[in-house]
Length: 213
Image 1 (spheres, rainbow, N blue to C red):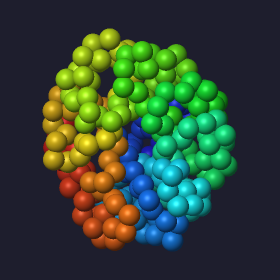
Image 2: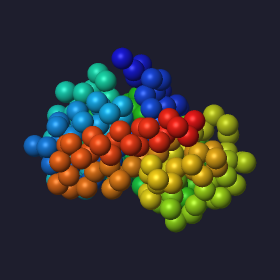
Image 3: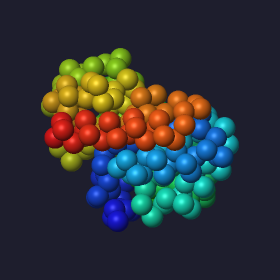
Image 4: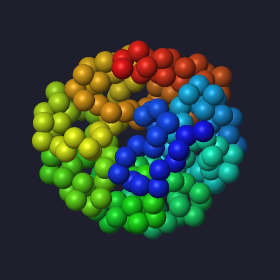
C-alpha cells in the first residue's frame, strides 16, 4: 500500500508520478473509472472543480479508493475551495495558477498541493508559499526547452510536473528536460469514455512512463 505523506513538499512515496485528470466526469461513473485507473497502476486522481458535482465525485473516490490512491481536485482557485475539497475527503489540490493563499491553506491542512505556474517568478512565489511540487501549465505552450531552462534555477528538491498536451506519445523529451511527473487529461479520459477504454489508455501511459526511466 502506498505511504501517504502528510507533507505537501514531495510526491507521496509508492505512487507513480502520474495524475489522471477526470474533467467532466459524473459521480455515477467516477468509481468505475477510478477503479480502472488504479488497476492500471495510476494512483493519483484529480477531479477538476468545473466538472459536474465534483465534490460528490471526490467524496466517492476518497471513500472507495482513498487508502490506495491520492484523490482530490483540480482547478482549485480559492482557499474556500481547498476547505471544501478537504471536507469531501480529498487530499490532493491542483491549481491552474499561482495563488499563495491557496497553497498556504492546503499546506496547513497537510494536503499534497501542486500549483500551476508558467514563469520563474510564479515558480518562486509558489515555493515561497510552501509548495514543493509545481505544475508547468499549459506545458505544450512552453515546451521541454522552457522546463529545462527553469530547472537550472529551481531548487533540486522541487519537483515539476508537465500538464497540458503531454502524454504517452510525447513524454520522452519532457523526461529529458527534468520533468518529474505528468498530469494527463484527454489522453486518458474524456467525458463519456467507458471504464474499459480508460483502463487501456492508462496501461499504455504507465508502460510509457516506466520505459522512459
